[in-house]
Length: 137
View 1: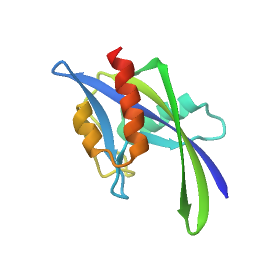
View 2: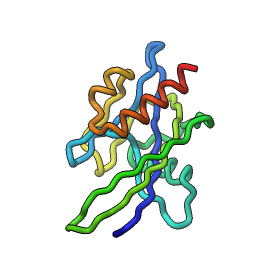
View 3: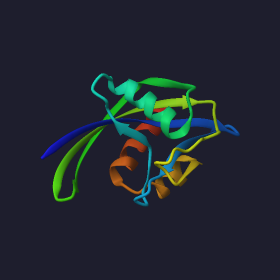
């Protein structure tokens, strides 16, 4: 069994006075947030910043310090079990332009309700709900 740690960001911006969240379409067909594997010399926050720039081209982000959430799940690659932990941060950007990397097929900026409908996995929906609640308070 292999263990992996990734970090990512739930990114939002304000478009026409409404909060919109960025979600990405992964080649496997699911919709989720920016995330990627930590490198040995990185903190989770450094990983999240690097992945945001690599996957979207967005560099102007401001973290919401009250938010840091973890999810864990298991998957298999060639019959090898991989236990994965993902640490998510919440951040705001003024950008709306996204330059997708080769790792993704598409992106959307969506209001909370629309993002909840589009996001594939329940653990991502739970994280988004927590993020939205922090921003509402």
